[in-house]
Image 1 (cartoon, helix red, strand yellow):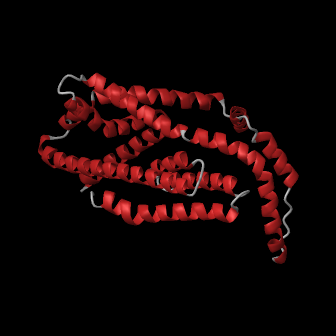
Image 2 (cartoon, one colour):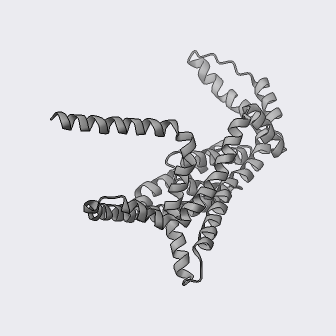
Image 3 (cartoon, helix red, strand yellow):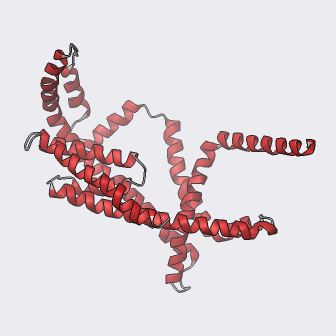
Length: 306
């Protein structure tokens, strides 16, 4: 009894020590952990490319092609926001002061009826808009970066991680299969049958989930882009595609897409078709999109697969 308690205490202390060490080293280990996750996701594509090549494609070349395609794809998705902001910021500069006057005129009487007195510094807000939302997008970004006071150490760490992840990812993909075999060799022989079956099942389920999620993202990208275009939104394609691809990040991706669409719709239609039409566009498109995702696409393309 005492021996068992002592052994459990030792294992518990070791677990606590390991967790503490990982917590302290989290900033250092983060790019390696990210590279390991990406290697797990991209390794099937590397193996598929080698099989398609019929033995003529070396692993280093397959890794290089897959990683380059992944970097181009992720960079393209991130850069979708730039043309959206480049178009919307001049519109905000021109239309936001008028929108603020209209909102203030509409809201103030209702607040006064409730006994709520709110003093809005419209002159200060307009001065802020004219100063920071100028027509030059690059100058606006420079002002934003300066106002955020981004320190050199933070920027250097960010750039370092962005450069480190692709390098670590390349070497992990090169040695991924051999690394898995070495990890398997560390498993006690009497437990290999159980662990092999468990990891094979987990890998199969994870692969099916990722494939299903990719189909959901593609379908939603087509839906949002097409629906916003039918309503006449100028930035329908970049906002729609970004929203569809960003739903992979639960809640946050949808929220960012909804925010971008709302802003673009209000700025485009508020002075013409009206604020009600702008609200209707976003409400209809994103409401139906959320129902489509929750009740049709995810249950059929993801739920049935896992």
